[in-house]
Amino acid sequence: MRSTMIRNLGIGALALSVVALGGCKTMGKKDDPGSNLPVADASAQLFDARGADRGRVDVYRDTDGLRLELVARGFAAGTYGMHVHAVGKCDAPKYTTAGPHWNPTNVQHGRDNPMGAHHGDMPNLVIEPDTIGRATLRLVGSRLSGDGALLDADGAAFVIHAKADDYKTDPSGNSGDRIVCGVITARAG
Image (cartoon, rainbow, N blue to C red; front, side, top):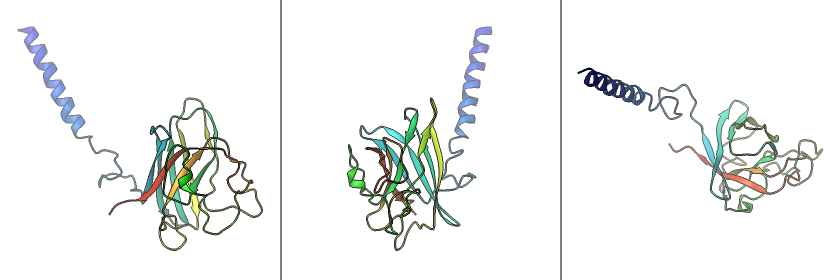
């Protein structure tokens, strides 16, 4: 009798847990209408040459341009260059199909270059040991669509490079191979 009662209590607790978790199914999702999280205007899922998921970039229209929210995972501790590239293609393994850095104003690369910086220039991503990389990036004066915009006829890609950007060497900051890439796509609807 006692073991039957304990077993029934266990089944009841399990059923209650399933119901409670079922109510959490959409909690925190960006597309949940009840969520407090803003819905990204565009995004890019980031992959390495083996096809492993390496993170995500969400793009939001902001009062002064575009804001990018990056989450990068699976990286060794170190410093990595990252840029917005001019073409929305990410053909592994070298990702050269992503084209050059996004440069609608036709200037040179690098914030420390007197002839730069272009819109695709980003600060370096610094990954500490045993952490996930996170960054908020701003593209002041940039637009998501229209003439000279991020998502023009051939799209755009977000690329992370093997080495740190030196912020001055044209055209790519001497940041090494392209090791992670994601095509930036507008939110449907």
